[in-house]
Length: 82
Length: 136
Image (cartoon, rainbow over the protein chains, first blue to last red):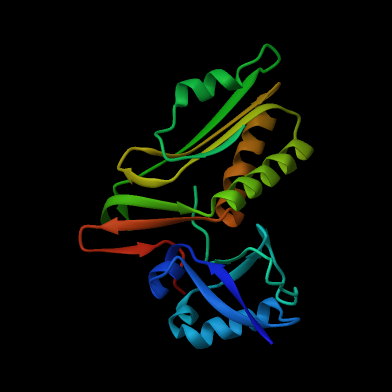
Protein backbone atom coordinates (compact mmCIF):
# COMPACT_ATOMS: atom_id res chain seq x y z
CA UNK A 1 0.00 0.00 0.00
CA UNK A 2 1.34 3.41 -0.93
CA UNK A 3 1.37 6.24 1.57
CA UNK A 4 1.85 9.82 0.41
CA UNK A 5 4.74 11.69 2.02
CA UNK A 6 5.35 15.39 1.70
CA UNK A 7 8.77 16.47 0.44
CA UNK A 8 9.97 20.03 1.11
CA UNK A 9 11.68 21.80 -1.77
CA UNK A 10 14.17 24.64 -1.72
CA UNK A 11 16.21 26.69 -4.15
CA UNK A 12 16.39 25.35 -7.68
CA UNK A 13 14.17 22.35 -6.88
CA UNK A 14 11.34 24.71 -5.99
CA UNK A 15 11.84 26.69 -9.20
CA UNK A 16 11.96 23.56 -11.36
CA UNK A 17 8.77 22.07 -9.92
CA UNK A 18 6.99 25.34 -9.26
CA UNK A 19 6.08 24.09 -5.78
CA UNK A 20 7.49 24.45 -2.26
CA UNK A 21 6.45 20.90 -1.36
CA UNK A 22 5.39 17.87 -3.37
CA UNK A 23 3.49 14.79 -2.32
CA UNK A 24 5.10 11.49 -3.27
CA UNK A 25 3.46 8.10 -2.73
CA UNK A 26 5.90 5.66 -1.13
CA UNK A 27 5.44 2.01 -0.31
CA UNK A 28 6.10 0.40 3.06
CA UNK A 29 9.85 0.07 3.58
CA UNK A 30 10.75 2.51 0.80
CA UNK A 31 14.25 3.95 0.98
CA UNK A 32 15.65 7.36 0.11
CA UNK A 33 16.86 5.99 -3.24
CA UNK A 34 13.29 4.87 -4.08
CA UNK A 35 11.98 8.33 -3.30
CA UNK A 36 14.62 9.92 -5.54
CA UNK A 37 13.76 7.51 -8.38
CA UNK A 38 10.12 8.51 -8.15
CA UNK A 39 10.93 12.20 -8.01
CA UNK A 40 13.16 11.93 -11.10
CA UNK A 41 10.36 10.15 -12.96
CA UNK A 42 7.75 12.68 -11.96
CA UNK A 43 10.00 15.72 -12.43
CA UNK A 44 12.66 14.89 -15.07
CA UNK A 45 14.06 18.42 -14.82
CA UNK A 46 15.47 17.54 -11.38
CA UNK A 47 18.09 15.35 -13.09
CA UNK A 48 19.75 18.52 -14.44
CA UNK A 49 20.88 19.44 -10.93
CA UNK A 50 24.53 18.83 -10.04
CA UNK A 51 23.63 16.70 -7.02
CA UNK A 52 20.54 16.11 -4.99
CA UNK A 53 20.66 15.00 -1.37
CA UNK A 54 17.78 14.13 0.91
CA UNK A 55 17.35 15.24 4.50
CA UNK A 56 15.16 13.26 6.87
CA UNK A 57 14.02 14.97 10.06
CA UNK A 58 16.63 17.68 9.61
CA UNK A 59 19.61 15.36 9.06
CA UNK A 60 21.37 14.34 5.85
CA UNK A 61 20.22 10.82 4.99
CA UNK A 62 22.03 7.96 3.27
CA UNK A 63 20.38 6.54 0.14
CA UNK A 64 19.50 3.28 1.89
CA UNK A 65 17.70 4.91 4.83
CA UNK A 66 14.13 3.65 5.20
CA UNK A 67 11.40 6.30 5.17
CA UNK A 68 8.17 6.45 7.14
CA UNK A 69 5.12 8.63 6.65
CA UNK A 70 5.95 10.52 9.86
CA UNK A 71 9.33 11.75 8.59
CA UNK A 72 9.97 15.34 7.60
CA UNK A 73 11.64 14.92 4.23
CA UNK A 74 13.46 17.63 2.27
CA UNK A 75 15.37 17.73 -0.99
CA UNK A 76 18.75 19.40 -0.66
CA UNK A 77 20.21 20.70 -3.94
CA UNK A 78 23.86 21.90 -3.84
CA UNK A 79 24.15 24.43 -1.04
CA UNK A 80 25.57 27.91 -1.59
CA UNK A 81 25.42 29.75 1.69
CA UNK A 82 28.02 32.11 3.08
CA UNK B 1 25.61 32.16 19.37
CA UNK B 2 24.05 31.07 16.10
CA UNK B 3 21.26 32.76 14.22
CA UNK B 4 19.52 33.01 10.90
CA UNK B 5 17.85 36.34 10.29
CA UNK B 6 15.94 38.33 7.70
CA UNK B 7 17.15 41.58 9.27
CA UNK B 8 20.42 43.36 8.50
CA UNK B 9 23.29 41.95 10.59
CA UNK B 10 24.28 44.22 13.47
CA UNK B 11 28.06 43.86 13.32
CA UNK B 12 28.71 46.19 16.25
CA UNK B 13 26.56 44.26 18.72
CA UNK B 14 27.93 40.92 17.47
CA UNK B 15 31.43 42.24 18.12
CA UNK B 16 30.48 43.37 21.61
CA UNK B 17 29.13 39.90 22.35
CA UNK B 18 32.49 38.33 21.43
CA UNK B 19 34.62 40.42 23.73
CA UNK B 20 35.87 39.08 27.04
CA UNK B 21 38.80 39.71 29.35
CA UNK B 22 40.36 36.35 28.44
CA UNK B 23 40.27 36.97 24.68
CA UNK B 24 43.48 38.24 23.16
CA UNK B 25 42.25 37.68 19.61
CA UNK B 26 38.98 38.36 17.84
CA UNK B 27 38.78 37.13 14.29
CA UNK B 28 35.86 38.33 12.18
CA UNK B 29 34.79 37.15 8.77
CA UNK B 30 32.10 39.03 6.87
CA UNK B 31 30.73 37.65 3.63
CA UNK B 32 29.49 40.62 1.62
CA UNK B 33 27.36 40.91 -1.52
CA UNK B 34 29.61 41.76 -4.47
CA UNK B 35 28.47 43.60 -7.58
CA UNK B 36 29.64 40.97 -10.08
CA UNK B 37 30.22 37.29 -10.72
CA UNK B 38 32.88 36.53 -13.33
CA UNK B 39 32.44 40.06 -14.62
CA UNK B 40 28.69 39.65 -15.04
CA UNK B 41 26.99 42.50 -13.16
CA UNK B 42 24.91 41.34 -10.18
CA UNK B 43 21.81 43.32 -9.24
CA UNK B 44 21.08 41.54 -5.91
CA UNK B 45 21.26 38.19 -4.13
CA UNK B 46 18.40 36.15 -2.74
CA UNK B 47 19.15 33.70 0.07
CA UNK B 48 16.80 30.92 1.04
CA UNK B 49 17.24 28.51 3.96
CA UNK B 50 15.82 25.30 5.36
CA UNK B 51 15.73 27.09 8.68
CA UNK B 52 15.60 24.28 11.21
CA UNK B 53 18.32 22.26 9.52
CA UNK B 54 20.46 25.30 8.71
CA UNK B 55 20.58 26.16 12.42
CA UNK B 56 21.39 22.60 13.48
CA UNK B 57 24.11 22.20 10.81
CA UNK B 58 25.70 25.50 11.84
CA UNK B 59 25.60 24.31 15.45
CA UNK B 60 27.40 21.09 14.46
CA UNK B 61 30.14 23.14 12.80
CA UNK B 62 30.51 25.36 15.86
CA UNK B 63 30.65 22.30 18.12
CA UNK B 64 33.34 20.74 15.94
CA UNK B 65 35.33 23.99 16.00
CA UNK B 66 35.03 23.97 19.78
CA UNK B 67 36.52 20.49 19.89
CA UNK B 68 39.44 21.50 17.69
CA UNK B 69 40.34 24.92 19.08
CA UNK B 70 40.16 26.59 22.51
CA UNK B 71 37.35 28.99 21.60
CA UNK B 72 36.17 31.41 24.26
CA UNK B 73 33.19 32.80 22.35
CA UNK B 74 31.84 32.59 18.82
CA UNK B 75 29.05 34.03 16.73
CA UNK B 76 27.61 32.84 13.44
CA UNK B 77 24.86 34.97 11.91
CA UNK B 78 23.53 34.15 8.46
CA UNK B 79 21.21 36.47 6.62
CA UNK B 80 18.37 35.33 4.37
CA UNK B 81 15.99 37.08 2.01
CA UNK B 82 16.87 39.74 -0.54
CA UNK B 83 20.29 41.39 -0.14
CA UNK B 84 21.58 44.44 -1.96
CA UNK B 85 25.19 45.05 -3.04
CA UNK B 86 27.39 45.76 -0.02
CA UNK B 87 25.14 44.07 2.54
CA UNK B 88 26.54 41.42 4.87
CA UNK B 89 25.32 37.90 4.12
CA UNK B 90 27.24 36.15 6.87
CA UNK B 91 29.09 37.22 10.00
CA UNK B 92 31.42 34.83 11.77
CA UNK B 93 33.30 35.90 14.86
CA UNK B 94 35.68 33.85 16.97
CA UNK B 95 37.34 34.90 20.21
CA UNK B 96 40.36 32.99 21.52
CA UNK B 97 43.34 33.74 23.75
CA UNK B 98 45.79 33.75 20.84
CA UNK B 99 45.43 34.77 17.21
CA UNK B 100 46.38 31.55 15.39
CA UNK B 101 43.45 29.65 16.89
CA UNK B 102 41.02 32.45 16.06
CA UNK B 103 42.15 32.60 12.41
CA UNK B 104 42.05 28.81 12.01
CA UNK B 105 38.65 28.33 13.69
CA UNK B 106 37.08 31.18 11.74
CA UNK B 107 38.34 29.83 8.43
CA UNK B 108 37.16 26.32 9.30
CA UNK B 109 33.70 27.64 10.10
CA UNK B 110 33.16 29.60 6.89
CA UNK B 111 34.65 26.89 4.67
CA UNK B 112 32.48 24.18 6.24
CA UNK B 113 29.33 26.30 6.22
CA UNK B 114 29.71 26.64 2.47
CA UNK B 115 29.81 22.85 2.14
CA UNK B 116 27.08 21.54 4.42
CA UNK B 117 24.57 24.14 5.60
CA UNK B 118 21.26 24.07 3.68
CA UNK B 119 21.20 27.67 2.53
CA UNK B 120 20.89 28.61 -1.13
CA UNK B 121 21.97 31.72 -2.96
CA UNK B 122 20.38 33.01 -6.12
CA UNK B 123 22.31 35.58 -8.12
CA UNK B 124 19.99 37.99 -9.84
CA UNK B 125 21.52 39.73 -12.84
CA UNK B 126 20.03 42.51 -14.89
CA UNK B 127 19.28 39.91 -17.59
CA UNK B 128 18.53 36.71 -15.70
CA UNK B 129 19.14 34.74 -12.54
CA UNK B 130 20.91 31.58 -11.40
CA UNK B 131 21.00 29.37 -8.31
CA UNK B 132 24.69 29.21 -7.40
CA UNK B 133 26.38 25.77 -7.73
CA UNK B 134 23.15 24.09 -8.82
CA UNK B 135 24.05 23.12 -12.38
CA UNK B 136 26.77 20.74 -13.57
